Image (cartoon, rainbow, N blue to C red; front, side):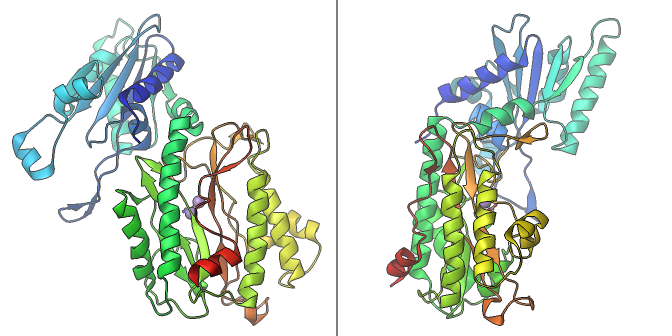
Length: 437
Ligand code: GLY
Ligand code: MN
Ligand code: MN
C-alpha cells in the first residue's frame, strides 16, 4: 500500500487552510550527510517534507503561497534538474517536468534558482511559516531572504510581517493519524513482528549479538524496509544499557537478550522491544521480573483510552512494577513514598512511551500549556515499561543483578479502545518458550 498524490494534496490543502490569507510556507527537506570520505549516509527525506509532498529526493524545497482570500494557493517545488551525467552516476531525478506531472506542483524551479525566485514570493506576504531552529544553515538563508525582501521594497511592505513556527500546524496534523496512515503503520509493525519472531527462532548460545541483529535486518530488507532506528541487541547485562547499539558481544547460555529493533515502511515507523532467554527457557529470577513487567505493560496498554491523560500508562505501569519489586524484596518501603520520591528510578529510569509515526520519536506536543494532553482518536503511542538491575548494584541480592527487561508495543488510541499494532509477536512467558522450543 502506498499513499497517492491526492493524499499529499489533501494534506497541503489542510495546511493552506490553517495558514490564513496572503501567507507563505517554506519547507526544506533534510540535507545529505557524509558518513566518511566520499561515502554518504543513505538519504532519507525529512518527515514533514515528505508528509506534505510525497517527494523523496534530496536537495528540494517547497513553497506554499495562499492568496488574499485563502481560497486557493500556489504549490511550488524547487528540485534538482534532470542531468544525464549526474543521473548515470547517482540515479534518476524527477526534474522540473516530473514534479509538475507526477507530484502535482503548480510551479517548478531548479533548486539553484531558490535564492533568486524566493524573494519575489516573499514580497508583501503577511505571514511566513517556517520551521525555525532545525537547520542553522537554512535559517541563515531565510534571514538573508527576509532582509533582502525588506530592502527591495523600502517604501512598500517588504517581506512578511510575521514569522510563525510551521511545526505548530504540521506537527499537530501528523500527530493524528488517518486510517491510511494506521494501515501503513500496521504493515511496518507486521514486518517488525515477523523479524522478532524470526530472531526468537534463530538465537543460540554463543551467537554474537550482531549476528542476531543481522537476522532482524534480513527480514526488514526482504520486505523492502530499513530499520527505523539503530537496532539494540543486548545480551545479559547489556540489556541494562538503554541505548546499547554496539551489539558486539557473544550471547550467553542462561542470559536474556533484549532486542529493541523495528523497521519503517513507506516512511512510517514501528518500534518493538522483546526480551527472551538465549537458551529458550527463563530462569526463576528472570521469570519473576518478566512477569511483573508484562503485567504492567498489559495494564498500561488497557489505560490508553480516549480522554485519559497521556501519562496514565506511565502511572499504571510504575505502580504495578513498584509493587512487584516490593513483593520480590528488591525494594523496601512504602509504595506511595517510593512513587512520590521516584526512588524506583534506580530500576526504571525512562518514560513509558512516546508518540510514534513517521519519526520513531514522533512529533506532536505532549502538553497543552502545563497540562498533559489526553488521548484522541488516531494518536499512536508506544508502551514500553522495563526494569534494569545494574550488574554492580550492591543494594540488591546478587541473583537479580545484570537482568534488563523491556517489553514494547505500538498502540493506537481509538474510540473502540486501544488497538495494538504489534500483537503478532508473542510476549507471554509460555508463548515465548513454546515458540523457542
Ligand atoms: N527504540 C527507541 C525507543 O524505544 O524509544
Ligand atoms: Mn520506543
Ligand atoms: Mn524501542
